[in-house]
Image: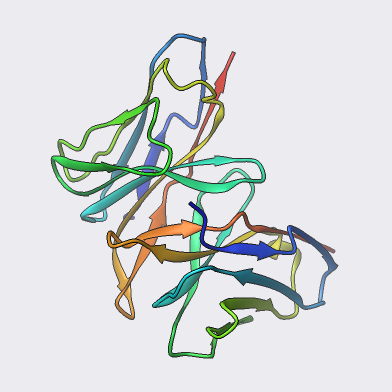
Length: 115
Length: 111
């Protein structure tokens, strides 16, 4: 079945450590996204990539980095510069259009906790 | 930036009742989407309504759009316990066409 796989589902990090969240899709979608979700704040866009080897900052990119070396993969690194990294991270892709509009397909999420 | 804002933040109903959630947005849109999120899971696309549409149906879902009031509503009829989830509206912002999500309505359907 086609879909988006995020790993790990749960991750614990000590302060000062960088961690990388994996996102892989087999939907042949061009665009991929990373969102952060905090309780009561909805989803906020961290980074997005519309094509391989290119990516753009979203609303809250500080303390995060990404790469897009392959169409299928869009890993997110949470660096030690991110002051409050504990959150639920969602990866999404798009390449499906309904009535000309971009529709997102989401992964199951990765929950990062800083100890 | 935040485009959509759902109301109410939380809603608790009995199975069989209807659930109505509202979304208000700030700028002009071409379309508005609704997504559902089960607890601890990713979001799933439910329905899209275009700016030239006033109402759209999909199974037990009914979405309305009032562009003059910059608002949309999602109605779930004959709710079931399995409808328990958070529901988000999303609109496009900026030239890149990225979706911006509201904070969501948390729906609890009691059996």
